[in-house]
Image (cartoon, rainbow, N blue to C red; front, side):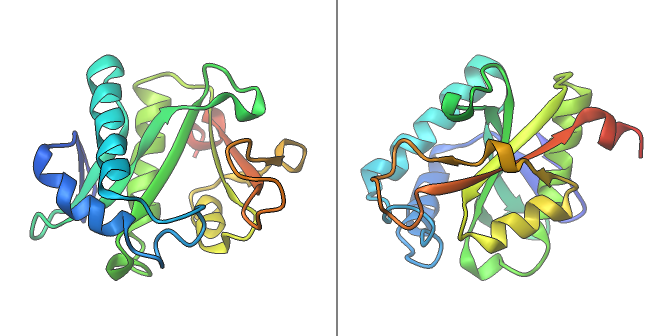
Length: 181
């Protein structure tokens, strides 16, 4: 479990399934994804995160507000997919309820995740990616010190050719950039 001034990032519990399904069914939240998720798809995401936590000790953790325990989505790290030949790398990501946007919660939680990846896992770098049109997520990446790797931009292989969110951008941050601050 990681804590920040305003957040608790923790392993998932079954009680998170319903509020997470509501987040994944929100068209605003999912506007940079191919579609909203059904309850079954959302539950499968929770199952994958629970398995990752059990197997590796980290995942895209459930995020809740410290002040009231309200579940607000996820912020965390996971093994990076092989979309851009980064086998063995660590990816950082977040998905929060629209009601929490603009409060600085994603960067706050992401900074804690970077510290964990670098200090506890010894990761040499962390990556993040998003649809090229997802400016809000790119701003979070930049706020936490990540820089865009123009040579690493790619077409997401799981999104149909010609879809406006198929082009993706890749951001990186090296451990020494964070640990030297």
